[in-house]
Amino acid sequence: MPTTATTMTDRKNAAISRGVGMTTQIYADRAENSEIWDKEGRRYIDFAAGIAVLNTGHRHPRVIAAVKEQLDRFTHTCHQVVPYENYVHLAERLNALTPGNFAKKTIFVTTGAEAVENAVKIARAATGRSAIIAFGGGFHGRTFMGMALTGKVVPYKVGFGPMPGDVFHAPFPVPMHGVTVEQSLAALKKLFAADVDPQRVAAIIIEPVQGEGGFYPAPVAFMASLRELCDQHGILLIADEVQTGFARTGKMFGMDHHAVAPDLMTMAKSLAGGFPLAAVTGRAEIMDAPGPGGLGGTYGGNPIGIAAAHAVLDVIADENLCDRANQLGNRLKQRLESLREQVPEIVDIRGPGFMNAIEFNDAATKLPSAEFATRVRLIALEKGLILLTCGVYGNVIRFLAPITIQEGVFGEALDILEAAMLQASAGR
Figure (cartoon, helix red, strand yellow):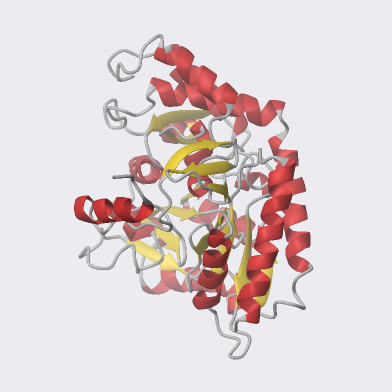
């Protein structure tokens, strides 16, 4: 009996927890750069890229070559037991690439959530304090500390019981939703006055561009004020660059768009081009606060992921992916802007580099419309384009195509996207 998407879905439902949500019913058979072919041979253009993992595309030849070479040497020793030079070299490269004119050190772990957990551990060890402040709409992972920091209840926190304590939230500045920079800063000061002594706060964690929350960039003035506030009270600033890192925003890191540097930075997703690898990089004296054995993990800095990451950094530099991200993002935003009159549901088009989003409201009520965003996504999927929605209201479509996407494929994707938006709006 041939395998079909329907039979695979039945098997999935019988074998896998329903807690593992699925955006599509596409079962991948093979992929190359910005394209995926499913088990039935249908081709899709991938504007999700594994949720920002594949900035260098599916199976970039240099990444695959680096992995194959490493496979012929060794696949695992656990760096804490038998270390290897490539781990050290990649740490040196990240120490040099990340923002901040000060001595840095790095650790490698496996996932973005694990990087965030370790950043919190390091901040607490370095400051002797326990409280952490995060922002509404932020996303920092599905582990317990990650859930506690994440500023969205459904689906990430619902049903999982009490979250870890000493975590506080402040509103993220999104002027189009009625929260200004001044109001966010005032809320932080109120938090200090009413809920937590700033002398008990170890760190403030922030995404330079909120990912799951809706692709809202942190205003430059807000980030500068956060840095000033942290310095005033001896609080560490953690930049969560899990989704923004590695050329996605048109610069190597999202924080490169700001004049201030974080004390600690978390990285993952596109660091290793599809292989599991994450990192925390920060001020050397802060990174050295935990004692030997306090950090690490069996698979942290696996040699396969390390080899892939070296190739990713080489590709970003040699193929000028920061410049290309800006070019692609500008073309995408220009095409979307041209549709404003025909698609009245459009309320905002935004995002630095190739980390772009479009937000929709209902044309009649002017309220956020998750229904319309979903309609666009499903029509596009039927036409062969994979899109992702996001946002606290679910009314945002985010665009995360590989920065290496082929010119012809990119043009084809823009045509599909336009047709899907026009069709969705005509059916209102």
